[in-house]
Length: 155
Image (cartoon, rainbow, N blue to C red):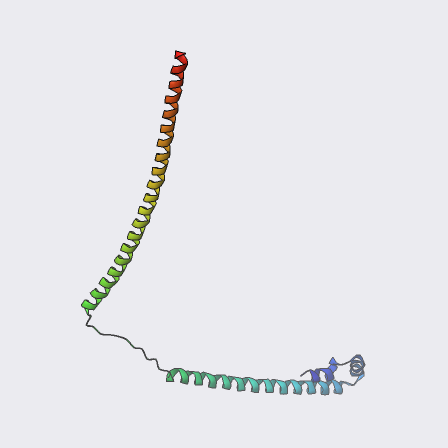
């Protein structure tokens, strides 16, 4: 496509000056050659477009054939007779499982709280015992000091 344009004035500077000085018949010949090249190129492009269009249509036909040949199998359980006993048994089993876990959690929580309370009782018992010992010690000191004060008064 570009070759025809070079011959018709798209080439180097020397060539273009030769074309300017050439008689008009050479210009007509050059234009005719360019036109012929362009027509040949456009014909080749049209043929390529037709080929690609036929290829596309064939691929679409093949895809449609594949799609129409594809079958889908769906398995469904359409049994209308529901076994309510098994459904109730399953729900009861789930409920019993949840209740058992809840019971175990509650018992674990209760045991941990009892252990905490026992520890608190022991701590408070120890604090109470120490406080009683301090009170007894202070009472003995008061009695001793009271006795010393009485002795000091008597002397």
